[in-house]
Amino acid sequence: MGIGIVDGESPPDYNCEQCDPKSHKELLEAIDGGIKLWEDRRTLHGNWSNEKDTPQRLGKKTGKGDKEVKNSINENSIGDGEDVFAQEDVSTIYPLTDECHHYTSIRQVPWDIQKYWQQRHSIFSCYNMGIQMTDDAWFGVTPEPIANQIAKDLAAISDPSRTVIIDLFGGVGGNSIAFALSNRWVQVIAIEKDPSVIACGQHNAAIYGASEYITWINDDCFSYLASNSSSIDPSKTVVFASPPWGGPGYTSDEVFNLNTMYPYSLKTIHDPCRHMDSALYLPRTSDLRQLAKLPPAGKKVEVVQYCMEGASKALVAYIPAACLVS
Ligand SMILES: C[S@@+](CC[C@H](N)C(=O)[O-])C[C@H]1O[C@@H](n2cnc3c(N)ncnc32)[C@H](O)[C@@H]1O
Image 1 (cartoon, protein in one colour):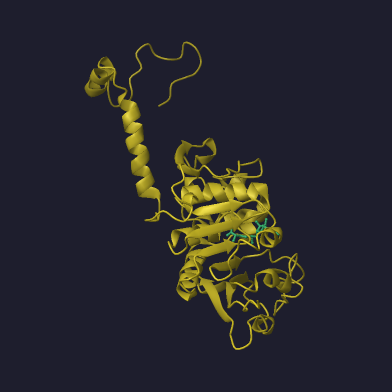
Image 2 (spheres, protein in one colour):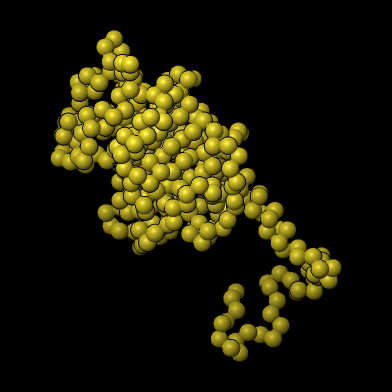
């Protein structure tokens, strides 16, 4: 039942369906005593729903130190009828833009992404909590089960001396969130050049309780690597890259030519990070002979196919670092 908003439509004594206001004894007594009971309940509910809905929280503070974390309700956090308490780090906040959407009905979804939207809960299990995407991001996001498996494999394969992971193409957070929640890395650095996409990524990380553990950098990843070469320690760092796969024949070629991958070829991506262990997320039909040429002499590249519902979605090439010649 609703109350009309037109003057004169409301009954003089509107009671909710269940009770009369006078029955709310505890509340009325609290008001008489100057206590705002509803504020305490709201806080309690906020804490409870955070614990209940957050898939996993890290048990430790990371290398970012004890930064202040503030809780806020963001109007863009409202999902399918649910409030989300977004946890925001006080480091740079990238605001959501008109390009960022949380579609709740297929009628809102552009036709070319409707098939991806139908799989939204496999892509982000917390979709209904207000996950934000740009329309282009649907084509490239790593689905959560695959991102989690990659995070697990990378954690297992990486030497314990590696404590920092740089996600070169952070996107809307599919992989970075999984790396943060794996509790393996002291620092997760997510680079994304598109301001709308990075805003979605940061927002989505907050939904998963991972924002405190990810440093978001709105930059071109190649410029970032070049300008931070003196502060990035290759012996402590692993690079993950899930580049765009555009270019001729991604879906139709029997063997995907990584040398003509657009806009960045395999060489363009691998060269600047060859002195660090790296993991490249690539089309499942990628030319393995091209990948086999990447590791330094005497070392091998490991290739893992990642499947969902029995079909490979992508492969990851795990490539050992080349030694730095001093
Ligand atoms: C395939 S998507 C990454 C998806 C991401 N792993 C996820 O799960 O959300 C590639 C992303 O790289 C970004 N990008 C493209 N070129 C870039 C560059 N030079 N530096 C940083 N980001 C870039 C695009 O804007 C896009 O969001």
